Length: 519
View (cartoon, rainbow, N blue to C red):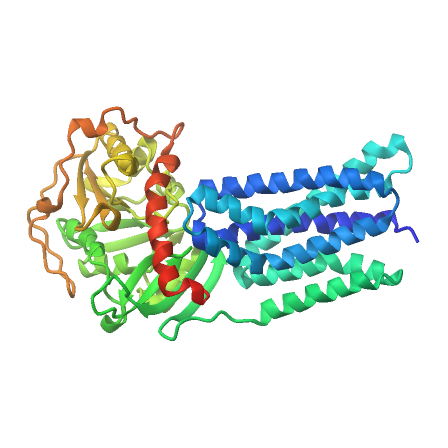
């Protein structure tokens, strides 16, 4: 019995929605290992288009060879659903094998293994449906237009639903399994009605694998306690209590905010979560301590709220801007940040351009491992920040520790941008090798005196004179370096050179201790 036009349109709607679910989930699956940079999204979009292109081509050939045979459509959709359900399985296997590759190569190869196959089968659906709908050649264009419009409508609705609610609420595996089952259930039922029992068997396999994946739990080492986990705007977020392997000699227990497999905040459980285990984090409040109590500070990027606590201990009034609401909620619930801290959920540049408040210090701490907020670090971005500074105010910007050579090109470019924006700029380098340290840019309209700083924390002695930690760049360091502008930000590519090296060291750290155990 030939299916109705409405039924075929419904299948087209489900296929269009499933394509976008596959794309979003594929990007989120990459995030813990390869991050969420422009390179990752370029790989996701490229593989998505490549998979659909291949599917369109194959679907066109098969629809001609098996004209008017609906079983072809049903088989293709069932296999597409099964391939989508398999993504949570195959993604872990391939990324464990590609983790040591470059960011670009690792992302592309991984996506080719776990995301490309379901997209090929989904791409085959539209030409097959168009062929089934078209009995009159004169109506072919109308049928094709309807199919692609309905398929695209499904993609739009599923994108909003997944991005705004389902993935943040339920993570990655469950949406992949449920969407795969939804894509296959109607075709499987249609095949069963014609006694095609092999299709029913394949659908049962899909349900068994999906049910097993949903019901399974990740296994972690006994000293690794996951308190919170979710997937959302920044990617994967975890709050984990685990030893400070390779960070402190005694590997003492700390609580970490881990975003996309990168430790963003790490505080000690032995000090009631008040102080960072990383010593470099204390150089921010040390530099800020040249300002008097009561100074107003704008912190762009909240993390686990450690910097808020440090600034409040200096007697500062702190406003924080954070783009991901989950980070704010986590910082209060799991990191003991003051719930009365004024936190604004917004993009940092948007807030800077729209606020009417003035601040003595503006701190840029919005970096997310391999991702750089290049729209903040332009001449125009720094000029916007200057407008909300009180006279004598200062900008502080966190950055990677690389400054020399190819890996340091991004930092030298940011330094050049500060200078071209008219700021007197110092570069504070925290102790350690370039790959293990941080650079803190200190920019203001007038010279600042850092010879009388005061801040101390457990395990961190007060530094009365910060000048011993300053770099002394020469004019040759910025020779041939072009400042960043809104029209030509250009920072992502330069930043990736350093971030890939830094990200690989983090991946190696977590793989040594946690990754093979289910991280």
